[in-house]
Amino acid sequence: MLVWDWRGEYPGPVVGLRDLPALFSRRSFRARYCPVKRPPGGPGLIQEFNALAYVVAELGRDLLLVADEVKLLVENGEENGVGWLLRYARPQGIGIAWATQTPTCLPSVLLGETRTLYVFHLDHPAHLSALRTALTPEELRRVAALPPHHYLTVRK
Amino acid sequence: MLARTPEEINDLIAEAEAIRDGQDPPGDSTPLHTPGGDEGADPKTPGESAPSPSAGQDFSELGTLLVCLTDGVLCHFFGPQAAMRGELRAQTVTAWARVLEKYAPVVQQAGPLGTLAVCYGTHAVLMLAAGQWTDPLSARSGEAEAAKQPCSAS
Image (cartoon, rainbow over all chains, first blue to last red; front, side):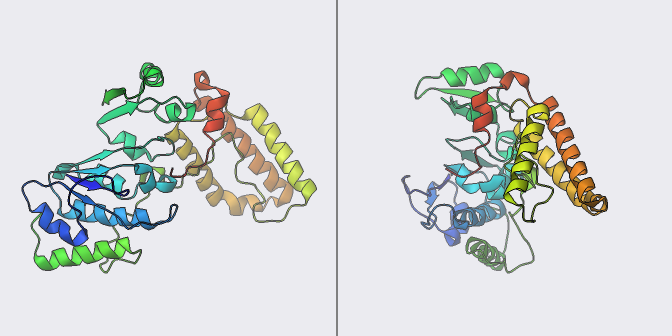
C-alpha cells in the first residue's frame, strides 16, 4: 500500500520517486509519499501527483494507492493522474482509495470508475446533487439522514 | 513489477521528475495530462449567461445593463428550473463552445444586429433544451444556487 500523504498524517516510511522501483519489487510494503509543501491553489501539487501516478502506472502492480482530499488533484475538473490510474491501471491490479469532503465538480471518471463508495453524512444540496449519477434517490435520502460517523456503502 | 531494464527505469524516473517539476518530459511521451471526460467543461451552469456575443469588446454602462437585462429576461422565460446533472452540463457547454467556434465566422457576416439575434436565439434554445434535461423534482432554490459555486479545491 502506498499513501499519498500530502498532509503528513499517516505512519510508515517515506519514499520518493527514486525509491519506488525498489519498493514495488517487494512482495508487500506499506509506505507513504509526502509531496513538497506548497501554498494552496498552485499547480505544483497536481504535477507532483501526476509524476507519482506515472511511476505507479508504469512500474506498479498489485498495489493500493490511497489519495486523501482528492479534489486537490483534479482541479478544474481535469482527471490528471488519478483519472489515468482509475481508467487504465486496473488490469495491473492497481486500486485507488480516494476520499473527499466535497463531491461537487469532480471529473466524472471518479464516480464512474469507482466500484465501491462509502458515503458519510452529506446534506448540502449541491453535494447530494453531485452524487445523483451514482446514488438512487432513496440512497441520497439515506445519506442526508445519516448520523455522524455512519456511512452508506454503495457497490456498483 | 513490469520487466524493464535499469536504464529504462532511470529514464522513466527522470520523466516523472520532469513532470513533478513542471518541465517537459525528456522523452516524447506526454503522460497523464489528459483532461478526459470533462474536457472543455466550464463551471457555468446552463441557467447562467452564455458567453456574451460581444465578448472582448467594450460596452458602455448602458449597454452592459441592457445585455444583463436581456439575459435575465431570457433566463426567466427559457432557463432551466434547476442545475443540470454534471455530465449533461459538461456536454452542453462543450456543444455550445463547438457551435460558436464553427459558426462564428458565418454568423459575423450577418452584421452586428444579426449576430446578436443569432447568439441570443441560440442562447434561448440552449436554455430551453437544458430545461428539458433538468429534473424538475430537484428544482430547489438552494440546490440551484449552490450548484453555481465555482469549482475549486477545498
